[in-house]
Image (cartoon, rainbow, N blue to C red; front, side, top):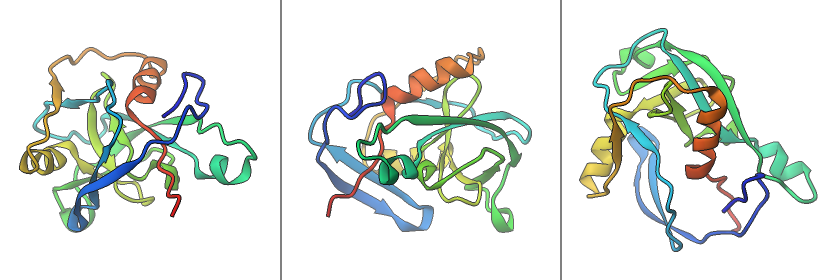
Length: 171
């Protein structure tokens, strides 16, 4: 887990609960519970041109630093296409600048709600409507928010830092 300045507080052991290879999703369970949760968008439809933010961790910070800070990184963009390759409605494309540290990280709307999860470096994200099905099948609860009031990018980053963590494989 991380301190408020992004420095490493401690490593958390996790176990893989389930993997969905078709949708590039996995659920990990930490042995130490996290008290912060993401709010998932309750919107039924993805809109082309909607502003997006992503939050992730730059892998180069972990590899190149003697003492990695795991500083989170927020980027902005828009939904460039409301569907993925071959018109796949499970996915959307975003214009946010991404790196490997964004894969598995949230795509957030202007109100801070999660509207997707980055699935690869090619600007593709699985929509929240799809990963909520995955969570429902596993009987994992989640929170939705009907608030549509935009918040500042700095508030989105602050919220995101509380529910995102860098994944480091030690094996």
